[in-house]
Image (cartoon, rainbow, N blue to C red; front, side, top):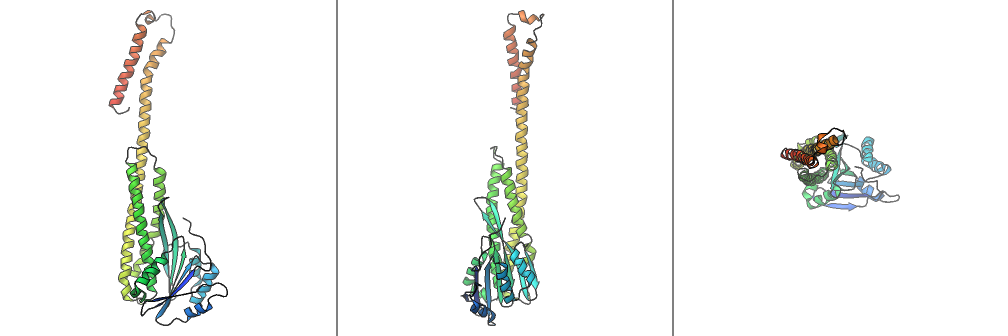
Length: 340
């Protein structure tokens, strides 16, 4: 699905965290003309026990380039963040780690899975998140960091953990909602009602494929974060292992949903084929039943001069009786065989 549109220069927030206490201090780092040069100077003058989290919402290229120059970001990384059409991945640009993540949310009214993107840049003293889409996982991530100051003491990597944790939790919630819709579809597929569910099943399967394309590439991206790294505190590894575990379970759930939707579609198409066969049997049975009176009436309608039955007093009622008897015998045979 298409992501949300671009935003204005004011869609930027900065928080300075002190690693000794984990406390955060929000500063105004908007880049409007004549604006917060003092705040940029504050970012440039971070103390050794401080790091900054800059959150940008759908920035324009010039805004991100200006911030990128300030943070010494690679031009290719800036280009990826602006375009916002990246698969989940991680790349190193010198001492800066860039991680691209897909955001997902389920729209219950339309059963659509909408996607967005978050690009996370981690440097020695900063974390920069660039978001595209209608939902903002960084808001919840900041709230969690505020509630867990011990995590903020781990440095910029705490931001990566908080954002990935929120996004993976959203994956699990979306998978649960898709499972609910699938259960309802399965109930309709195997019900006696003759509802054509082909479009609904295919539409949900298409959303699950989009869901799968967001999750599966992220699994190998998360794996390196579950081992001890020289440039990261050892304390953060168990937290990333927990996120990776949730991601793996959700990935398995989405794979199962995709398989079940394929099976449901096959079962429904087989059911539709059975309906068509039943209809054809009924039509053929009634055509055979009507063929008997048509044949008898056709014989007596030939108007030959020498037909002995024409002068017989009981010929007419006997012809009607023969028509009714033949049709009745065929009707009984078709009912016994389940054709009617």
